[in-house]
Length: 166
Image (cartoon, rainbow, N blue to C red; front, side, top):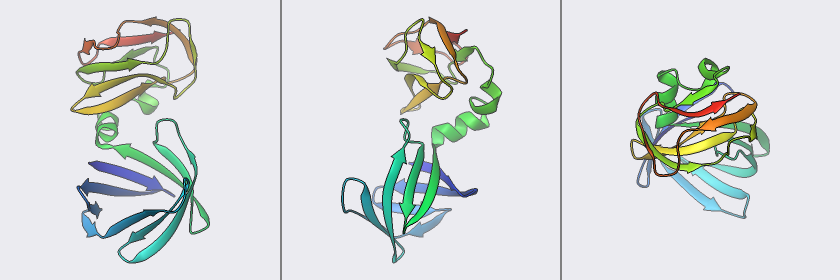
């Protein structure tokens, strides 16, 4: 799995293959030990870090933690998130969108809203599977669900309207 982690404006490419890790294409030795429900000790190339989770977003893409006593805010993007961003799907390009469309062909895994629901910016509307990965489609802004044109188990095509907001 490949990810991009951003903290303090610095982006790091992280790749995990089994038990091995690469940060920005350099192999690193990483050990992870859980101390309590919210605290772990992480060793990266011999350097120890005590990490205490303070807050994790519902979609697990934003994390606030204390790392060796200093607050750190992490933003995590998967390969799919980066691909969608590159394709111009999500983010600012959909900020005022009222029709939420499938960014690529896939399968609807779960619909999390109903017609008439009030939604907030960033709220997860549905989960879909594409390229063997589960993804979340979020509301680009606040609004009310006008219509839902898909259900669990439906196959969707790129560009197909899934949810319409008013």
